[in-house]
Image (cartoon, rainbow, N blue to C red; front, side, top):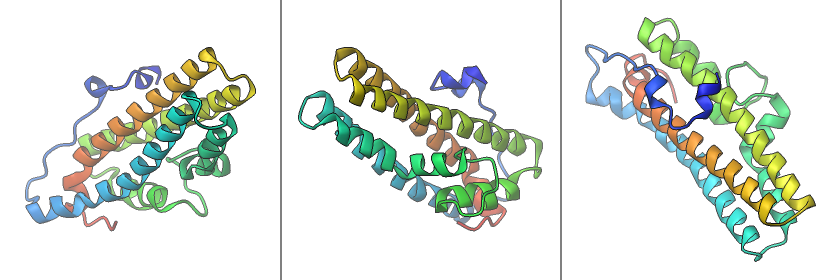
Length: 186
C-alpha cells in the first residue's frame, strides 16, 4: 500500500467500466457525491488558511492545533479509528454514505467496479494515516515553533491536501455512473 502515498497515483488506480444503459440522468445523480466532497474541501481550505496564518506569525500556534483537532475528519479518526472501510455505529454523513450505502451496493456488481471500490477503501486508510501525520506535525509545531517544524507541517498538510483532492476526484469520476445506474441513495 505504500505506493498510495505517492499522490497523484492515477497510474495504479483501476478504472470503472462504462455501464451500458447509463444515462445522463444516472450520471447527474452520481454527481451529487461532489456536493458532499465540497464540504470537506471547504474544511481543508479553512485549515490551509489557518496554517498559513500560523506560519506567517499572524496567529498563535495553539490555534492551528485546535483547527486540526476540531476538523470533522480528525474527530471521526479519533472516534472510530479509520475514515472509511468499517461499519460503525454513528458516522458522519459522508462516511455513512460510503461505508453503509455506496460501497456495499457497488461492491461485487462487476469485477472492474469492485476493484475501484477496493482501491477507494485502501485510499481511505492512507488518508487516515495522513490525517494522523498532520495532527502530529501540528502538535510538534505548537511544542517547538520554528522553520523546521513549520516545514514539516506544510509538507504534511500539502500531502494530505493533494491526497484528498485526488481521491475525491477519482471517486467522483469512477462512481458517477454506477451511483445513479444502481440507484444508490445519496
